[in-house]
Amino acid sequence: MQKVKSFIIDHKKLFPGIYESAINGAFTYDIRFVKPQDAVYKGIFMDSKVAHTLEHFMACYLRTKTSEEFSSTVLYIGPMVCLTGFYLLTSAHYETEFLRKLVLDCMEWILVEEEIPGASELTCGNYQYFDLSGAKEFIKNQIIPNFKSDNFSSRYPFVEE
Ligand SMILES: [Zn+2]
Image 1 (cartoon, rainbow, N blue to C red):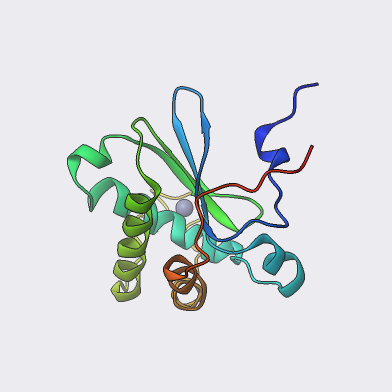
Image 2: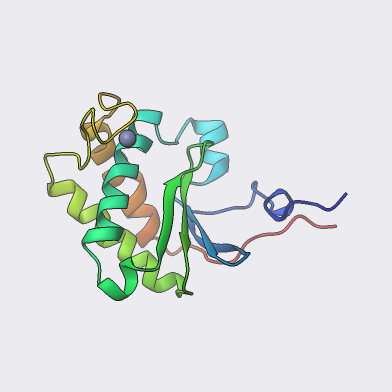
């Protein structure tokens, strides 16, 4: 049986960063906010309400607060169910440094916002399931320091065959 590419990535050695994870007609970026080993052993990962909050803000930012040239290539943004990061799918290729800056700009924007975009019964599947202050804490304590760190990576560590 063919192995799924993400299953041959050594998650024990994976650092926060942005990784190009697949090209199947779309470019897929693994936006990893926290180190999986910290999630497993220190309990550092997004609460699911925090992930939902970030999902609304990131979708809004990428689709409405970036250039038309960029926003028109955004196909999907959403959280990983392991709660350590997000997936971004685009129809054009981007350098990880460009996306790193974009994510940091988005996080700075969220920190000053008081209202969650699209958080209404009409526009969301679970419109009371949010945590804005928790999201801001996670941004300040994890995402921003990790994305400004020298340990930020864009090269996947693969499992030794
Ligand atoms: Zn929602």
